[in-house]
Image (cartoon, rainbow over the protein chains, first blue to last red):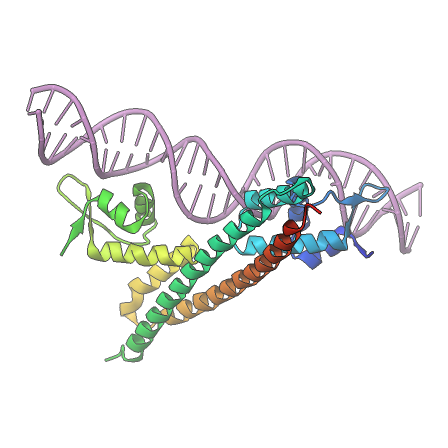
Length: 124
Length: 124
DNA sequence: AGTTGACCTGGAGTGCACTCCAGGTCGCAG
DNA sequence: CTGCGACCTGGAGTGCACTCCAGGTCAACT
């Protein structure tokens, strides 16, 4: 199993060392294995997991959402935790967001069309 | 021309009174007309404009983006200001965002499918 | 043995976008 | 004319998500 030094994990996830540690403190992932000197050694699994976190963060989920998500994952062995419901809730929120953004995109398109036309003939 | 008291403007734009005043201070819109007692009187135009701001904010533009946008609008009479270019830049950023969100949506779909299946047979 | 550089910790600092507050003014219903 | 409620101001406070920092440890190179 491949492992990664902090700097490499940072590079692969696109997060700073600080952010990686920050996420770990908040228990969004980990615990991360340490070498004899106390330095972090990230596994494939860690890196992949952080990739998921980054993706969901990019999508606009907050830290507390991710914490909930993690919590449910952890307790999954002890029966149903509503994990799927939680995910579905976030999915529908995300869809709303996307809809909003598409709306804004439409507005931007309109504005661009409008002002392009104006600028095109502005020195009348 | 219809006008609106602060409370009504707040209702129509979905922003709090505080936020409305905050946006005005930052010159994202206005200046807003006042009555004899010094109270704000919002016009149709103000409300519509704030609607645009809200839409762009929803879409993830920051306050400083909106300020730039406003600045260019103001100076438009004195020749080309690169307003269209600015809008186009934001549009492409927005498109990236949407793409990211769609990616996240795909990931969520996968997770939901995966954990639904697991939960469905979890009490094995 | 000394220097370098990557890493460690806990905690303080930053930037953003609000949000709240104290203390005050006004116009109108009773 | 007295409340009352909506509004005003400048400025302080909040919550989030990092980001930076001082002071220290350790392994490897020279």
